[in-house]
Image (cartoon, rainbow over all chains, first blue to last red):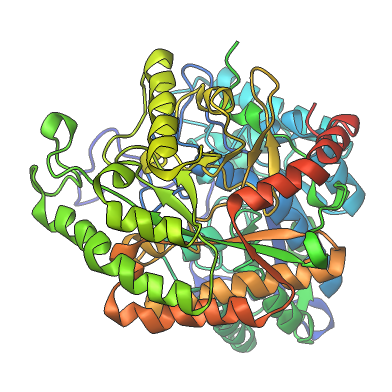
Length: 310
Length: 307
């Protein structure tokens, strides 16, 4: 019995997420005295200027000439080409920076990118990075208007294309523009995915329940994401760098009180891979890798650490 | 057969490409692109230029006209002080209507890059016939008033159509600045197979998007520009790949009195590093076409990079 009468079509909570709040959650005990688990996820999404009829596209997204976020008029190639920068140049700069720092990482690819650019997939295969599936394209989304069968085909089709091109299997998923439906977690679990990075929901990995049991929400927070910070918020790059380091300081301090923390770094080839921003990636990774309290692991390993501790 | 925009791009990962080198072993080519624009006082259809007030939008019009009346000339003093070659992204109307500016650019041997006729006349959705006439008129204006044909374009208000690249090469152009997908010049596919090069322009190191649209400070603009060039230099030192940096300005903003010292800081930096090739878009394009276009295209095709 509740006092508030909610409209009939409202769903208050996702059924796959336990409503558990910080004070009532058992601390995450990390091995070897570590306090913070950090995972680096590098995105290499492909933006499509022409999409199939009926495609569910973002209402707003970043990139292009100025601050406008609506879809550019057909014939303006600024957004298309800026996102494409990430595939030819930016992702390789970020991978090189991570390799030089000795940081393990994951790379998220989509169907359009690996189909058009097999060489991109080959490089990711050779890098040893964890492979993550990132849907069909940067601007081809899952949506509530799609049938269950259409959503299954979207997820399985993207996965088959990405895995086939790279020649490796993926257990992680990240939805383009973090666009999902109410049944996406369930479908990801059904298809054997182990983690989904689209939910910025916590400071530790969160095992989902019910129909999505087996899938973990691995939180890659917006405020630590370059696209959200530098484009969405318009943060200056030196402020973003300072914010990341302050976040790490606080998470490490909080770990003594709350147990182990997780930080997902979500960086795009077309954003932090730009020459004007790449120094931030280099300096932040150098700082973090030198801290003994931090375990730098791939996202899949972060989930394994969480499962082992549970 | 229309080539879709995604398919115009010739892909090869940066680490796999044949090397691009610049004259005299320079590492990074820097080009300054002042956008000298004309905005119609009453634009075609008399629509609102900025969606703010109806036409004439005097706030919008006169600020930009101020850029040509005053700002351009202040900016010119900084350009002259540091002898910066410039590739003017030009509303071609300026050549016909503003002879003082035309002559000043001519005296300094500025390269004219088309930015359309007026910056309130985008070419979105025009027919192929209309767009063809647009290039004919553009080249006629350039030849008549500037004495040379145009080699490249930044679309008016960054607009284009599905056949823009194809028509540009038909009218003798060799580079297009609307694509920002790389730090090197790259081939763009055209229907005829004629060579067209994407020259790296910037909407980041660009005063209007950065300062007006994204609200960053003048100081930040300088920081970003210098950080960009320094990183490109470091990477080029490391992998031997020549790169390109563009500094895009607009006289109505970069020509403002308070901005002059910031602009000079950028120019001073550019002139202080011997590893930089301070040049124009056409010189970069010509060098790339002569020395690297074929090798890079062949390598991308051979590697099956995107085929």
